[in-house]
Amino acid sequence: MTDRYPFLAASEPTCPPSLLTRAQGLPRPRVALVNAGAPNPLQGIREASEAGLAEPVLIGDSDKIKATAKEIGWDIAGLPLIHAPKESAAPVAAEMARGGEVGAIMKGQIHTSTFLKGLLPSAAGLREKGTRCGHVFHITMPGSERPLLLTDAALNVDPDVETRQACLSHAVTLARKLGIERPKAGILAPTEDPIPTVPNTMEAQEIAEWAKSALPGAVVQGPMAMDLILSKAAAAAKNYESEVSGDADIMLTPNITTGNALFKLMSFGMGCCCAGVVLGAKVPILLTSRAQGAEERIASAALGVIGGRHDFGGQRRVVLDQGGAVHACSGVGFVGLGDRDRRAGAAEPWG
Image (cartoon, rainbow, N blue to C red; front, top):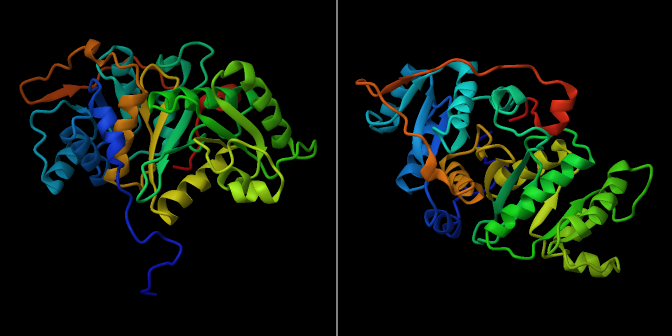
């Protein structure tokens, strides 16, 4: 079969210029790229660096990183290079973030579950006790710079109400940092009617009611079916009154299966640029699919700058030895994730 699959986008995603412009006016963080030895992530961090969005710190198998850098024509002789192959890379990045040596962490050629298990357990020291992390995608259509923030499509597998509330809070905060003062959020469900036999419709109603007092200035409505979130005409046809319909800034998904499918349809099927970041940890965690290219990694770096705390000037300097390398230090715990951790912000293998 030689014809292009008709459900794939005809063009590759491009990073929206407005996202770059907003990020370039903010302090630039040092970004630890975890398992950097593959062309897509290495080219992404290179272009993010050239755009003024990141000071790269490369972590992984040093031989692979050097070979890949040579392959893409990038001279990395002056950059921090830490030899920490395979599963040891993410805990090293966590230790550097905890110590103030980096201001953001980016996923490289590493499985999402392995990446996050090295960063988000309590032993890694990147989450304050009781903090719930959430992943947010910043999604723009080709030819448009208006974003839709999708949460959670990459981190929380089957989140409870409290975790979804945290995800929504992170998305609202990010929307305001992006200049959206009165963000409008739709809580996705199969129908707009709360039905006891469809639990996520009841949860959506609960979250929308909670948001009235918890998220002042935001407009949150749910449950909402997808057509009602996207289309004013669909809302009119169903006699559904909503400020959110056809004007949503945020979409809150019921679970990771729904969110991840939506994100990949938008990225691969519609050609959208999907920048991803985990919020709620000590530093932004830039999380994209391994199949995403450099443009979406650049956009993710920009999103991390915007979504961060903007105090990157306080980072401790990484010291190189005479060969330009930094050897990995030990001491970061690597632990398994129980059910409680999984619901509060852990990952399974889907990335």
